[in-house]
Length: 516
Image (cartoon, rainbow, N blue to C red; front, side):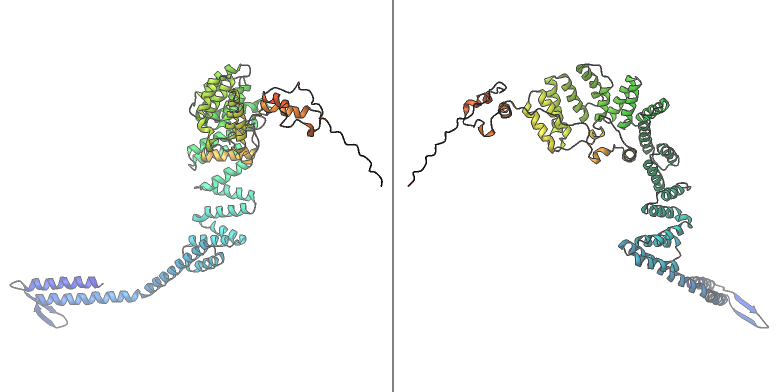
């Protein structure tokens, strides 16, 4: 208002000065109610400006007075809003500090002061949850369902509450309701996906993956991993079915999974087993070779080895070399190279393969499987002491997770439904293979060979101790060199006769004492 008046006065002054500055400023006359007023033009301009100024001032004052109630209401609302914001702030700070009781008190106060119903509902739910009051928590999250912006949050809170109470069916129902919303959240998909996995419902999980990909909840990579692992689990379930149609379905699942994700070893192994039973050895080898190129695993080469049984060791080594060539620099390929060398019993090849594994057989890299392999290699090279040393070293070495995927009966990936759930979820999320048997510490195929305890220079003493018929106290003592000639020369004591008994010292006859 002041700015407007100042502008009006400025314009009036400029006009008066301009009129006064001309040679003939002119006259102005006003006749009103039989009165006549004559004055100069500049004075008339000034008078008009003053009157306009007074009129505008009067009008603005009148408006200001008429708007006083609204100004007072806005001020009260601002004060109330500030108090509400401060109450919300204190409430969230109480939740963060773990004071659920004070947080609930602030939430109740904010309900009367704050117009932001969304934040008030959220604070009420968090405060009730912090105070471990299930009834109040359920009521707070249920109240969220009436607010469109908070419906997903309310469903999530109710689902978590149901899970904490052990009400799985209710939790799944709430997750399904959240997933059916126009814009579902990722947590709803994850809850349903994990529920299907836990129940072993592979077909339902596959359908869920397709729907989530269409709705752009998951990435194409996640979808491929999940589908491959789910189809492999389905194939494992149908692999031993009595019906031929089920086994055919298992083969179809396994082949599709192996093609979709060659790095998922169980799919390739199951597909190769089923193809081998169907006498499609060439196709089985192709599947295993593709999987080896993507992610080598000991179960792959063991399955590859067992595809053909009627072959000589050299032929088998030559065939396994084709697998090695698909990924020659990988650790598993170097391990397999040593296995092939042991098959052919070629000492130069064994020495070369041992040298290639030197980095994996030292320090923290060594595992029980490597110590067992190095022990076999040392024995094949004639280093019996070295072989025993590697076996002794195995007691301190760690196991291999991949080797644990093969059980004691040489069955690869013989998992239960719960194990498959872990494998599927881990591979879908991270792209790596979980090892449930390793986590449980279950025994699998032997990693360390059973070596003979015979040590030539000591065996004569051992056999001598076993075969002698005399008492232990009558065994030859170390100073009886003649009895140790066979031991020193490394001879066997199979033909050593029983030792003659040691001569006994004759007792002195007791002489009766003379009677006094």
